[in-house]
Length: 370
Ligand code: THG
Image (cartoon, rainbow, N blue to C red):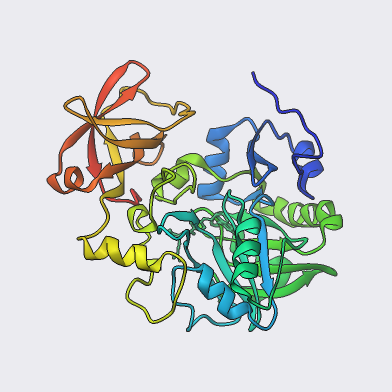
């Protein structure tokens, strides 16, 4: 078994001690932070997410805050989506691209006020990118990583728990909308969001010295709902077709290839980095590859780890890359996510992927599976 050597270079979260006390067994590194991935009981963690309520330390979803007189213009320039209709209190799923239209990140963008925004980020060095773009473009803004650490509460019982903690009015909070509030004086931004399709909230703790306190309060109120620890769930996210940036894409992927077309503004008056490149992709007939689901003919009834992307082939020719393969407890079969050439997808071909016991046939299907 491999172990991770902790050091100041790898940041730990304000909830770290709480996660260890809760039996943390497995972690990954995300945005140079230690991020929990399991408490040693994957099936129980899945069941809890599907049927109950789970508490996840997702502090590694760091925020980059952009504020100041030119913040709205700067955020728009960094974002491949028309933000003119974005409202204060509303989060939006967006793509940030480089000048060639390649996706650098797929954050939830939160408009805290006119002139103050958070990118709630996947795993890439966006603080550097945002600082450089802002300075080079002469935007009058402040770019920083604030003391903000999300704690996710996910699952069908999350709403009752959050309503008990924060009041009945949270039930009317719409998907991806948020409100600035506090829990017994602990400052949080409460958002109806989270990296699962089972419902729930994220509590963006705004004081890293109070992580243990916040965790304990959520846990104590959650006991009557059977709360337990969890983490972004690999099986559920594949069933739900949620994108994992850095995993599901290759470094040259554009967001149109990742199924993000409905969150991308291609024909728009607003200017942003990568727009010309994305327009070229559409003018050429659309993306060359697509992120798809695979129904895999596998005899295995449990998931196996995929430490790296592996080839998807058609008659021995590589036509894509597979980024996740899991046994879906709900579908009772093996499913996968892969980036596959569009002509192969449109032809409806049966492709092959490598399994622990040799090649397996796989049928291409649309995401999400469920
Ligand atoms: N919450 C917060 N920050 C995050 C994530 C999160 N940062 C990292 C990562 N997750 C960013 N990536 C995603 C990917 C998918 C979704 C959210 C963030 C997501 N997508 C839905 C979908 O694709 O069906 C809904 C999108 C929509 O309807 O707008 O939820 O989870 N704070």
